[in-house]
Amino acid sequence: MTLEGDLVLVHMDEAPAFFARIEAITADVKPGWFQVKMLVLQIPLVVVTWILREAYINGEEFTMGGRPMRITKVVAPAENILEPEPETAPRPIPESKPSPQASGAEKVVSLAERRKKNQGT
Image 1 (cartoon, rainbow, N blue to C red):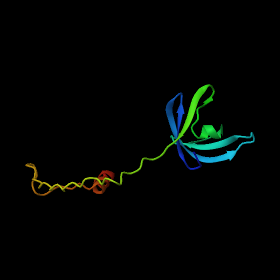
Image 2 (image 1 turned 135 degrees about the vertical axis):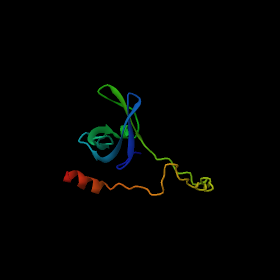
Image 3 (image 1 turned 90 degrees about the vertical axis):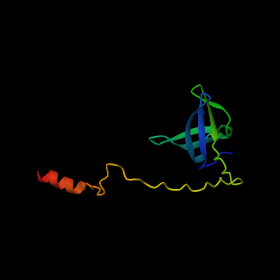
Image 4 (image 1 turned 180 degrees about the vertical axis):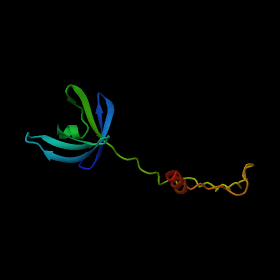
């Protein structure tokens, strides 16, 4: 059963089209129909309200403008708590060797100082 706050995947023409979150499910004026307000998870975010039967909200196929549609509730996969991840031995950190070009004194360039010089000229 799909409820308010659930994440759903909407299929159009038997292909996944978009994810949405059910914001509200309220009774419509027509008996047996519901207004389903969904936040479509896309950029930019879009809020739509569809008038659907309960069976359609719960995954039964329906049509809109002649196109087959289906709403399926998304269930997050359970974390695998029975088998812990194998522990890996920490790898030793390799010693860094100075590059042949290093002179021992590294030069640090201050962007703030560079800007001051450029503004003064």
